[in-house]
Amino acid sequence: MEERNLNFIEEIVEGYIAAGGGEIQTRFPPEPNGYLHIGHAKSICLNFGLAQRYGGRCNLRFDDTNPVKEDVEYVDSIKADIRWLGFDWALERYASDYFEQLYDWAVELIRKGKAYVDDQTQEQIRATRGTVTEPGVNSPWRERGVEENLDLFARMRAGEFADGAKVLRARIDMGHANMMFRDPILYRILHTSHHRTEDKWCIYPMYDFAHGQSDSIERITHSICTLEFAVHRPLYDWFIEELGIFPSHQYEFARLNLTYTMMSKRKLLQLVQQGVVGGWDDPRMPTISGMRRRGYTPASIRAFAERVGVARRDNVIDLGLLEFSVREDLNRVAQRRMAVVNPLKVVIVNFEEGFGGAAAGSGDVANVVPRGTSEGEVAEYEGRTEMVSCVNNPEDESAGVREVPLTREIYIERTDFMEEPPKGFHRLRPGGEVRLRYAYLIKCEEVVRDEAGEIVELRCTYDPASGSGGSSDGRRVKGVIHWVSAAHAVEGEARLYSTLFSKENPDDCGEGETFLDHLNPESLVVSKIFMEPSLASAAVGEAFQFERIGYFCKDGDSVSAGRPVFNRTVTLKDSWAKVQK
Ligand code: ATP
Ligand code: MG
Image (cartoon, rainbow, N blue to C red):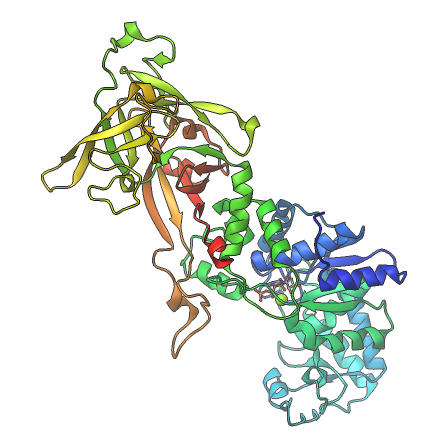
């Protein structure tokens, strides 16, 4: 583990262990009502990371107390995402595993005169809660006797009453300074089938009556959650104390917020349901599944979580930090390839001079090379084809080299040529020279236009003596550009992503606006791309650096699209470095 200062939760844990507290037990408690997002990843890294670091255990507990919004699809995706992030849980548990025990505890509170059945509607209850400055009003049913309450609660469970007809409330203090203590609702009636318990129950516990007790049952020593639960903590403690059960403790940290990113599951669901995105795993989504498809690696997400640290106060993290983290990881592990997004044809007019066709092919000059296509069909190219050795990953010598065909006609990036370039432009210009990456110097001799005046081709010459990095007369050339052989290029689709929202805080809404008014119309730009032949056989999910363009990974849509589809994970430009000064 790398050296760094302890965060405040680690300090608490170390204090606990130093005081003889023993093995720590944490848990990650998602509600299965949506897919996990990068904020959850932060919580996962924290909870599982603590258990790893201090030799403890971390459970996965589904907080499944609201059958209306929950589904097994979400349970399955959550488990897959946690495993993909590189973590494994000690126990897989569900709050619904504890429904019987929770029911018994509710009965115990009724017996102690600490809970009662209220016939008021939830609206009436809300209306009589009072405000921060005014006490609430006691329910007319607050003084029901224990026997009557026990009877009514049993009949609630038995299904005698309609949804909303009654609730079970704690009997604490309607004038309490902490509004959470103003006779909070413990159970509500919901005649809804649950994804696990099916129709066994028609009453369901509220979050506050389930979470702390579930922690206690699992003997969670450190129940870590986000700051908005701080106001719930006294109530969490109250139930544990009243019931005399294992004393779990809750600790709060600041939730992760990211610029240009929406992190509410409810709103992410809205994006999916309204078809704004292609699904929960749309590469523009901040979900773990979206990020995976986009090309993020588990290591990069864990490194990001570590860099963000654990804050006590709410803050907003620059999206650039996340991009920095994935760039850093991919720079280490991704192989380099050449691909051209916005092609301009270059004809190297003297490339075949002295080349006598098939008979003359020898040494490093092959005259027939299979053309790589996504269908694996082999087209033949009869002209001079020189195989150029290209380094797969300058950061990793063991990645070796690959051979890339160079021919008389190639594609270069349109933006790598300018007729009247500004000062400091080191790429190609009329009469100018540039180096083809890992190959020769070429010189632009002529610019060819179509009838509309658009540049359609550059006619260039190459310097045959410049193959090994030098030149025929020792002249030096600054610019290096990537290229692909036109005869061998594999055509594919590049999906160039930007932020889904154009506003730093998508929730910052003016009159009559919603976050949907801040969608970025250019969050996805689809472009044709011409790639070196080796990319035809890339595996779905495989990550590459397309030299000088960005990091890309192959999308599963390649199969249905009938051609390779590559998602841009992140550009090469490091905007985070600028942020850091
Ligand atoms: P949402 O409000 O988006 O539905 P949630 O907090 O209700 O999120 P849960 O499934 O209840 O979602 O969250 C599981 C755990 O992940 C909780 O402990 C929660 O505090 C934590 N968590 C959720 N969002 C974030 C976030 N942005 N940063 C850090 N932790 C988070
Ligand atoms: Mg929640």
